[in-house]
Image 1 (cartoon, rainbow, N blue to C red):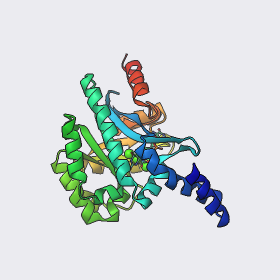
Image 2 (image 1 turned 60 degrees about the vertical axis):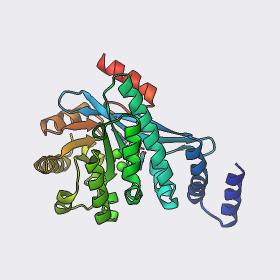
Image 3 (image 1 turned 120 degrees about the horizontal axis):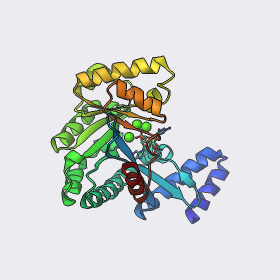
Length: 277
Ligand code: C2E
Ligand code: CA
Ligand code: CA
Ligand code: CA
């Protein structure tokens, strides 16, 4: 708190605008929030597009700070990347999510887990060792863990990223390209990437029932992905009509508010019981 008042005083003297001040406060508050485990993970189901069965979950960070209120990952992840805090954050996410997955497996819930990695994580030399050991320690097969990286994250340092993704894949982890279609990866580049799964960005999915352009893009992307032997995921399914279209187009996996918003672990367990019951 002293630190935050301090930041405010500094910002005030320099005539910073509110948004800039908030960013500064986030940068100051994040390290202790990570250290003191005040962040939370929520889980969103990944659903078999054909039969609606639950295949696994994607872990998504949540942070509610007593002064800053709800801070969205879109807001704090880029700042964590700029300050280098992302490394500690990623390690916490993996630890917490792997602990949860171990619990679920012990309870007989054979879920798969997806976590998000940032571009900088791929430049961390010990990433593969860390993930391998973290999985092994909990008796988790790397096959049950997917690492999602955005298309643009891979394009920051393509050679480095390809090398790291190859190592991760050799260790048994699955790799997904997230937000596909929003970046600039060409078909040739995509073919070179050691990838198992392609996640079509939700901007192509949300309005697919009404947009012929989106439908065309998604149809041809799915054809391409299947040509390259990739599993396809459509995110941002908000309506049943979108699910039906994706089903007709032969998409493998769907995800979105139509099934469930991301939920805290116990809420997710309750949701799963209701969904399956
Ligand atoms: P993402 O990986 O593309 O995650 C999907 C985002 O879409 C999530 O937002 C999720 O809540 C939201 N979403 C899911 N279904 C729907 C839907 O049907 N409609 C709409 N409108 N949105 C939907 P969230 O949780 O706010 O996360 C935003 C981004 O922050 C993520 O995008 C990811 O890039 C990043 N992020 C979140 N957690 C982590 C993390 O643990 N590590 C890293 N590196 N990045 C994370
Ligand atoms: Ca993701
Ligand atoms: Ca995404
Ligand atoms: Ca995203």
